[in-house]
Every structure is written in C-alpha cells, then in structure tokens.
Length: 319
Image 1: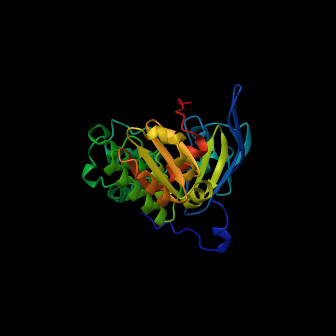
Image 2: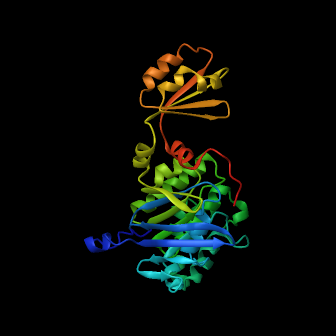
C-alpha cells in the first residue's frame, strides 16, 4: 500500500477533500434529504449515523453521482458531481452495504477485473494484487472464489478491491454489517491502517462502538436533516450527563415514579430496564443499595445513549 501522505502544505491541508453544500432530495411528497451540508478533511473519517429512513443511503448515492440532487452541490477534490463524475470516481473507493463480488472469478481475478474499470494496465494491477491480498489477510485465498470465503473474508476482499486504484477517499456503507465480532475487529484494524496512511473515509454505520472507534467526527441525521455534528466525545459531553445507571429486575419499573427519579437529570425506560442519567452516580447507587432485589450497571455515557436521545427509542421500519 502506498503511504498516502498527500500534500503537506498548509494551503493543501486547509482545503476540504470533500464538500457537500445544501443538498436536497425529494421523492414525491417526501423530502428525504433537507439542506444537508458537511465536509471531509484530508486524513479524517467522517461517520454518518441515524435511524432507518434518516437519509443516509440517499446521501451516499448523491455523493457517488448515482442519484441527482434536487438542489445543492457535491465537490470532490476540486471537481464537481455530476459534471466531473468519471474523474471523481477514478479517485474514490467504494464498499457498498451488500457484496458485489463476481462469484465466477477468484479473489485475484476480482481485483484484476475491477482495476480494468479504471483504465489501469494489467501489469500495474497485477503488481498491486499481492499487497492488496496481504492487506486483506487473503494471500492464501488468491485462487479461491467468493463462494468459498467467510463473510468477513468477503468484506475484506471488497475493501481490497476498493483500494485497487489507490483512492484518496473511501465511501463505506455499513461495511461490517453481518460480521461476527472477530471479523469486525479485523476490519476495524484495516480501516485504522488506511487512516494512518492518510486516506479519508466517509462511513455509514449502525454500530456505535464502530463509530466511536473509527470516526474523527460524526454527522447525526434524522428525517433527512443534520441534527448534530462534532467529535464523538464532544457530542457526548454536550448532550448527555456523564454517568448512566441501568436498573433492571423485579420492581425496577416502579422506580420511575419513586423519589429516586429526583436523583437523576433524566430517566428513560426501555423494556424492563430503567436508565438513570446523572452527574452524581455515587448518591444514586447508594440509594439503590436498599433495593436488594434489583441489579444495577454503572457506566459512562456513550454514543448509543447519544443516538437514542437525539433520535428516540422507537423502532423504525426500513425506508
């Protein structure tokens, strides 16, 4: 893999690699993206999170030139989508939510054929294949077809394929969905390596631990609008109390209307669990000690708490 250091001048580093301004998209009576603007700086990972129907996929499609916005602009490395779509795509790497590997080709052949789409010479592609397979921990699977690979291997092959043209920017749409914990951690390791090499990443995810681990900044969408943006820990500090005490067990729900409610800034219920959001966990835990039949979990506030506060706990159907 190339080191991806890019230009080092202050002028270059101050110019966003990717800029979206005032995007709007409507389907019939539904406006699914509403005045959305954001930027990605060189070498950073911007995470886009939000419930189903928040507008994430439509936004990605507009960024890729697959869907035309009703208003607004997408600028990539000084080029404009869709006017300069071919030149932009030549500098992008894309991993879609669903595998698009060719089942009839081996791992190495998938990389070779994909490289040809960018006008690369076979000799140049073949020179990159060994390092791409090594990066994906698939050297021993060069002659295997996708049907012989595990889910994690397929996702890593998709990532290696997205790197065949040595892109400066990667667009990853839920790249670890469906993977077991070991496969997810290996994928995270590879993405962190890419960031260390100077690549930039636009990442959509439903995994809050993934967002907190990988993302420099987060963009929170709901109903097509940007409702929050910032560094993960800054957003947590801005919107949440520092401590969460989860209480569950026989009688936990009765605490919602008990004097203990006044010991927390905010109380929420999900199923049989009561969540106390507080700046004074010690006093609350001491009081809960009298309720020996209950079980408690004390932890710091996290991105999942932020997500649920900003977008609600209601389950949304796919949209």
